[in-house]
Length: 427
Ligand SMILES: C[S@@+](CC[C@H](N)C(=O)[O-])C[C@H]1O[C@@H](n2cnc3c(N)ncnc32)[C@H](O)[C@@H]1O
Image: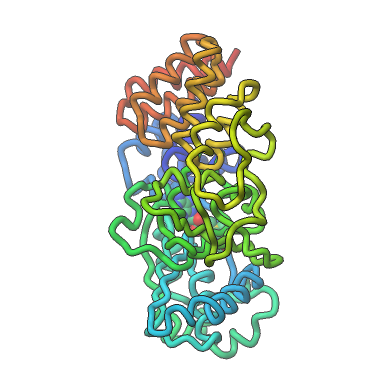
């Protein structure tokens, strides 16, 4: 039971889905932390964890996957140089290029970005790189900037010779590159992350989304969208591209670069909810119409009685009609919209579906997840409660509600739910 609660807490705090690395891996991390703390009983360890922020940090440091190296997925950096020289620089000859590396782990990624930009001929005074990670231990290593051969995989000898000094403890990165990166402690799940910072021209968010479940990925993509200027570039890891398909992030179509432009909405007064999932208004990338994009919601029939959708045409019918005239697969469509971050539209569809299917547990759970992603926590709790009312043993709904209560600081109510889930698991 306590292990299960710890797994759920880890997921709610840092997004790590136990299924992505395996419950056994988490169990062994917890056992090691218990040994380090001199605690034999896991329930006591849970108590310590709930009472001590230091223990949380230690657990996070042990459970995260900090795997990284210099010039990982090198085609991304090659494309970065090409983009900066051919598109960004001509438009911003005197400007400062703002780049974010999140998560940055032990620094190999943001330092590789800095080196790539120097190699492209940019002046360091025209480059601003922020690098964020949840692990303070990783950030300390990053600031120290001394690396072992393990951090150099692939064809990086040239950079190693040019920018690193071999020393007793390892290869020390030169001061010029070190001084180009600002390391910051932050959590991608924190809604106040980088609050008040200007948007970035380029965001690298690689090899983290793979550890998240679907709702967390949706939330993350929305956060990343906000962090980028319209037209800015998002780089993801090779296993993370699926989530961006048919969204307002548009592939640069460069093999192995895994780079996406955030679409530029040229409509006036465009709302945040319009900038998602192909439900955008008149949308262009670098002033090119997105006529080659796949139509949105490819798996549903076009709305009846509506005029044909002309790609690139400014229209509001997308959001409105798509939520009304798709009788058969409303719930599936709601899931697709939720996946794409079109949360308002997903809620509309869930409610329409529930109007016709009052007993749909699945719809209440989805509605609750979407409401939670929109920080409508009380409405979300009510939706999960309705699902639980319909099926008191519905584990997914119980887990969502337990996590939500935990998040709201209602530990008593959360613990009752955890006990209920635990009893179900034992049956
Ligand atoms: C596999 S590394 C990726 C590093 C680098 N982006 C790369 O691709 O080489 C994953 C990093 O994500 C960090 N991390 C995990 N959860 C996080 C969160 N919620 N917010 C910020 N960083 C997180 C971990 O500390 C770890 O350093």
